[in-house]
Image 1 (cartoon, rainbow, N blue to C red):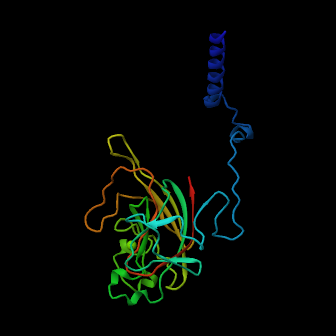
Image 2: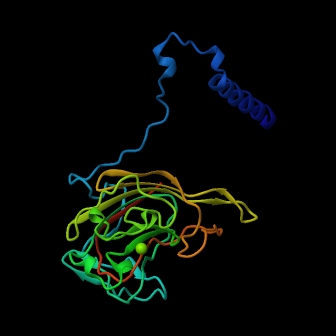
Image 3: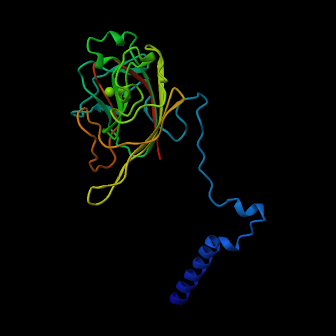
Length: 255
Ligand code: MG
């Protein structure tokens, strides 16, 4: 009996599969042929406020608590400043990391460059911060408004640091808030550690398209060429450089 049932199931599934894939037997004169009903996307409720977290997002920073964050270096409690609904880099404290680890994602993040960033004694500190996806791949934050602090193009705000130049400069002026909306797919590695698929990133800066499915070439290097190293999910890291950059309204959708 079990055997008969097995063959029945096998034949039935085979016939369904054959029906689905035998496109030569489809009636292309019917509008129904090209309409799919079986799979429905799940419902996600958008926020009534544009830019705020939709119903299925995980809020990483809500302006009230830094509980989801630790210092990247030693996983100690955040030393950054929490004030006026935002968190601001405490100079010389280091990078901040999410406690949680992430891979493929949609990430929304808002940041503000200090008004007097361009007066930094060291040019490289002027509004310098960055968002490291999987603690390795930096989407740069810098005082690049109107290019008043000239820097190599693949190091300006919105670049993938030393790898990719944004298509346009969409920076708000220092003191005003910026948004980054990021679509990121993590790299995939084979058993032997080689790259099966590189990481890709698409970015909207203040709603303006600046990076289009850019292929990330490996872990960011200040000196030398980027290289991939195999890894799994990893924290999102905000860079503490030499400027008091602020952040607010950070949320993520894992995809
Ligand atoms: Mg940086």
